[in-house]
Image (cartoon, rainbow, N blue to C red; front, side, top):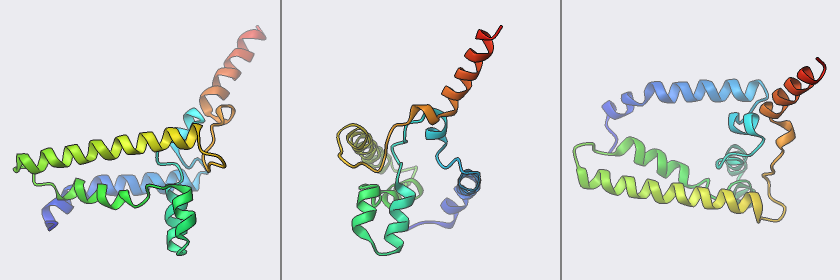
Length: 142
């Protein structure tokens, strides 16, 4: 059972993440990881998956991100852990490690092996490449 004290503990991080998400989406940046690197993050497609789920389109939800159903489990594990119970904390850590490994393996599969993947690498669109190319053009014009 979630305690009010536990929920209050996560109030500020939840508020920060919510504001950050709204700012990123409203500025057109979307994912900061992809914006900087041109590579989709392991959670890429999660927003589209949940929007599809809200429209009761479960097939599209799994297409956009096949692990969307794990996020509520992760949130529950984060906010429900009893810090005093070392065995529960150890189990939680093991479950989180397994989930992270599953996410990384799914990410790699979607990036490199999945046909018609909803995630693609586009290095030319990332801000780092754009900045480096401007610097190189500036130096070469000297």
